[in-house]
Length: 352
Image: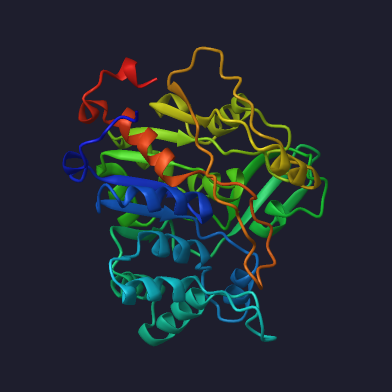
């Protein structure tokens, strides 16, 4: 039997989730069942798909990661609220100018034009969707993500790092933004004053480290007295983490965020279905092997984290997407049981 958690006690704890994309969507979707004291801090370095149109044609920062987090935290207690959530998720699959874009992105663009501010647009959309918590961009500065590789080559743009036209087996030696950018005051305050920080899962360089290279983020995490947990991805990614094992992830993470700040690292222990593995061959991706056998300053948690839901590509979506994802309930349950073991009524050693 699973360990029961006293939700009434957890709801007073505040959580910050750092990331973006489907990984953060997973965590937020599960976390909102426990508390509404949630802040999603998301990267604004996206440059593929609709993000390119938003930046190039409308002069706005990309909003896809903002949209995903808003949808994850949205109220679904009524048919009307559920329909609004579905509306924000809807992706156009026809139309020369809008094919591949989502209604939520276009809605945020329109709100920005009406209100004159993306910050105000995000806040207003949060009200419309009656979200549990807050969604904050890590920075409002217009930047490009830049990766320097081990062979000396340099790639500019999140999309070209994530979906490489270069040799995707090359390792990134340095990641930064051009120009440099600073964390917003709101994001800084949330990180420094929360009770727990959850980092990941998500594109390692294009989502997770894309946040950590923003000036002030690591400093705020360091100052925070919150418990901290890093969620390992399920699969490696060609172009980002080809051939990585769990220890490689930790070694690379340590270049940007000292891993002695972490309390836990959560990693999947269940096998990836064989039929999924066969599909991943064409993406040069493999399950991440847990080789964290050395002594680390954090505790390694191995859990079954894979969702059994079949992932279907949306019509009109031209970007590469993962074939398997984390299960939101499994991930959040594991996080809370270990971050706050006293609420489960069990000693930490019995939570293995």
